[in-house]
Image (cartoon, rainbow, N blue to C red; front, side, top):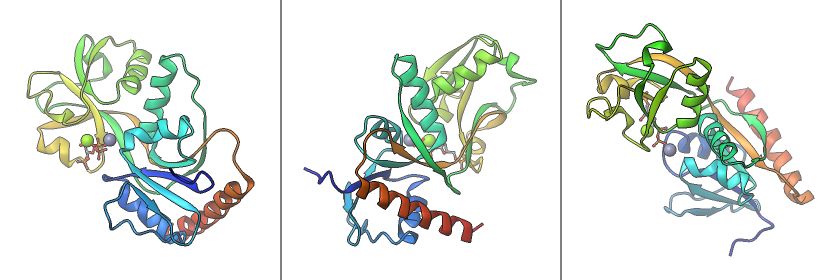
Length: 225
Ligand code: PRP
Ligand code: ZN
Ligand code: MG
């Protein structure tokens, strides 16, 4: 069992946010040995445990109070929020700080030869995505009816595979779209990494440690601006 008195932080195990998250911890003076491919890493010099998990699981771990803090992309956080609300839940958390990495956009993309003059072009289309709630919120506002095709990965192959007419996925450099003969036609959400804290009771010791980390982060982020 994990020691509940230690501060628990969730970070992405591998992916776009993991290196930067790790760097941030290091520059805040947290000494951890992540070398060993462990799912839980213990800080040597502070009462902190780092949980290394899939990014998609981080918002839920914070909302369910399993971890105290999490570093997550706003896109994943917002999708989880909408998904839980759709199920009648009232998820709670606090945003401590928007971070200066993990920038990306959630965009609509179509095959190079497809015409696009606006969201109306997607009327009655099939759209592949891992972000069905964010997509629906956007297209509902535009009064566009569509069918979403939920894929948790390799969303970019959907048009070629005949599964969908368009996709709605994250774009960072644009290389993935280009490699798959797709063109970004509309940005529906802009995202960065953010640090969130669970709601509810927290010991004074933990809150002091969180405040100390936040002050250090502030310094680190300001220094690289
Ligand atoms: C996103 C997205 C694309 C890629 C786009 O995946 O699903 O695969 O990044 O990046 P590019 O524009 O630089 O090519 P992400 O890294 O979020 O991984 P995940 O979906 O597995 O969490
Ligand atoms: Zn993911
Ligand atoms: Mg991906």
